[in-house]
Length: 106
Image (cartoon, rainbow, N blue to C red; front, side, top):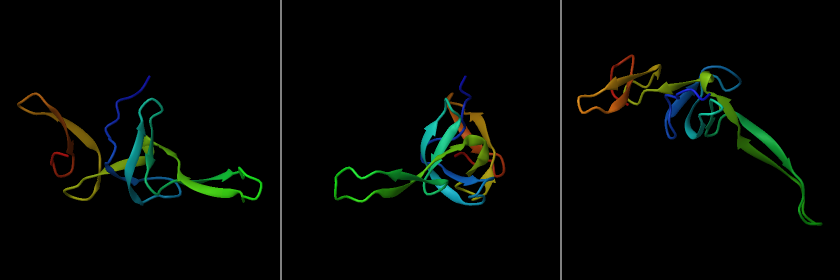
């Protein structure tokens, strides 16, 4: 069963564990069923590609790999800190995310 993720594509996040700990990046893709995300320029992996034609060389392609969503924290656009996300239901009935440190809507 997929858990409700509090992050979306395009959000700025900070990695809190692993080889890229402390680095920030933008979310490129979200996989809510796997509870994983892809962050631009972080968790870079290599893939070896064979040559397709006879006189062509093989290549090593670098691409961002999937990260577990538990290893990241959202960065508040207002206070620029790594935060936990909360939800507020506004008077018009819409559900919005907010920063738990500065109480600003995201």
